[in-house]
Image 1 (cartoon, one colour):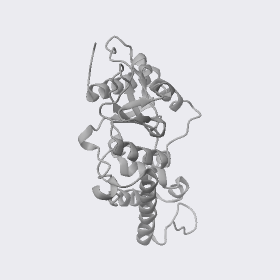
Image 2 (cartoon, one colour):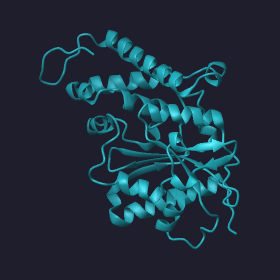
Image 3 (cartoon, helix red, strand yellow):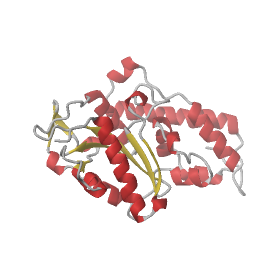
Length: 260
């Protein structure tokens, strides 16, 4: 049995994603980031990532995977964290496409890249039902390969305002897509970005990068997903309000004065 830990599994998934996508078209994959556990902290949203793997596909689509090791004989996730699950459910509810990802076997060493992706299951946080450490209804969880194929389908949509922002030359690097910037991208109206000139867009992005979103440990530990989503919405509304004060009047490209 080829047993491995979360770091090993994340690496196998990352290599398999890269090989699988680039075998069809090298341009489809725009970058993969595997931040590691030390760079993931729900209490420090401003500087951390919300998943073990962040992949950018087809310019403006993203895949976010929180990787866990499953014990296939017991259908348990020994490293399952209920508070992390609460946070990821809030992230999902806010419109950020994060998923859990776990192995269904340890026998991966002879698998092709496609088989590795097919052997991993990738439920959304809202689909992951747990009984302590035991996975309930695991047979309903979609294979990672199916999730990837759906994401790369031509009919799938770009993530939030990411396409508009990258077309303007911003947030093009995969390492910029930390939790705070994902929240910003999910919240900001793409139509607003379209009417701003490049300097205004750059100022807005930099203002968002410096804006505080983090939660105190005490406050976070007592919040449910709806309350965390409410925190995101309130902070994003304040971000736009505070930034507007620095930008009045806003001058859109080739149009009348515009305010957010």
